[in-house]
Image (cartoon, rainbow, N blue to C red):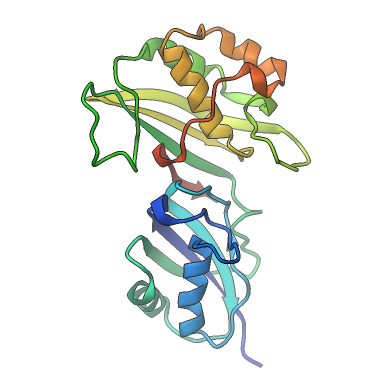
Length: 247
């Protein structure tokens, strides 16, 4: 009986034309196009397991998935074969054999996201799908103070989108910081896991801080309120990128 191999893939994708990661009947998803490519290469393989789901319009530089297959194809050949079949907005960065117990979701220790805001006075049509354009200056110091207050283990239900069915709303944030390069404002967050729309809801709140509509110190009150209505709006998806997953 052939030995089942556990294959780990690291992917990058432009989320613009996808209805998110997870397979949805009749809709174009990253999982769907990846499975279409795998169907052409392997006579049999297990269902894909991903480190997490990204929403429609969200991009990834380091999404991780794994699957089992009895095929003997060398991992370098797997990468090349997949990239020859995948559309231009998805790319397999690496393919590797991992131990049988590896699970892309349950073994993830942390995930890192970045959100990009462009504050140039003149709107740039060429970046509209890859950054949120907020014309005018933001109070970066205030945003830094508010972002830093999120570090630690907290109840993040004030930043959770509706429709979530998670067992616990407590998450641990290791890094939450803001930095600027030119007209771009970058928000980086690394945590043990994230609630539905959590990062985008945090960003929407930080932008309100940057616009002096919310005091930086109020971020703690908002978080402790455990009330979604106290936080800012949900930032749109195009500025959000899954940078990577740590194991």
